[in-house]
Image 1 (cartoon, rainbow, N blue to C red):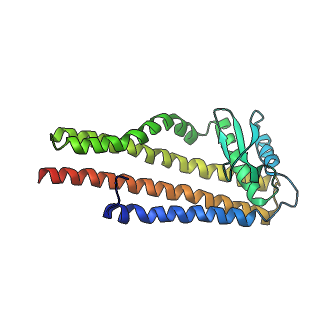
Image 2 (image 1 turned 135 degrees about the vertical axis):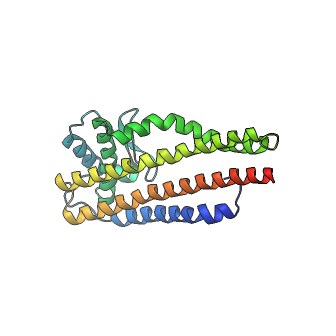
Image 3 (image 1 turned 120 degrees about the horizontal axis):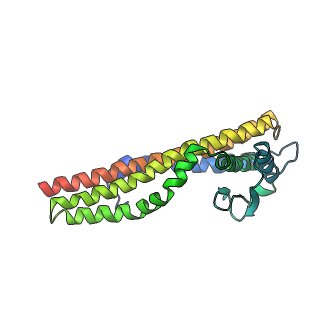
Length: 237
């Protein structure tokens, strides 16, 4: 962001690498457990439907979507979209992913609080992510004409901090969806115990990508604060 300097290399780069490692681990875990198939022969879409029904949710559609690991739950249309390599698959990995998305649908159905908070702050977070950097740059430039303009940069930093808040709320949402998925898989007999362990590993690997993303954003926030503070120090000198 802005440019690459010592603050980026020391603060941000290690966590960018961590995020890349986490993403690679998701792909490798999914690939590994895509080769382990459910003995009961349920497809991922059927497993997701069973999770919904077991939780009293009957108004959510399940559709196929193009792409690799593009699976998601769309709360606006109330549809679970499963990627092509997940929808009809009977693999442990695919079932784990599908049940995770069903877990998100259940969260919305029962009014899970972190989901409500996350949905409420999405509009302002989107605005903040677009305006934060321009405001920081503008504030730094204008502060050379008057110290009072530095407040513009700090407003930009505060807007960027909304991204941290959003990702903080996302963490419990994702972990809870995975817990719901694993519980449904085991209690509902969707997978045998050894198969459920594989699904759990796929979901755990996916959860770590959100942890890594949060770490990157927090370090970016710290870096932006340092950039703004150092610009003000140079102006005073």
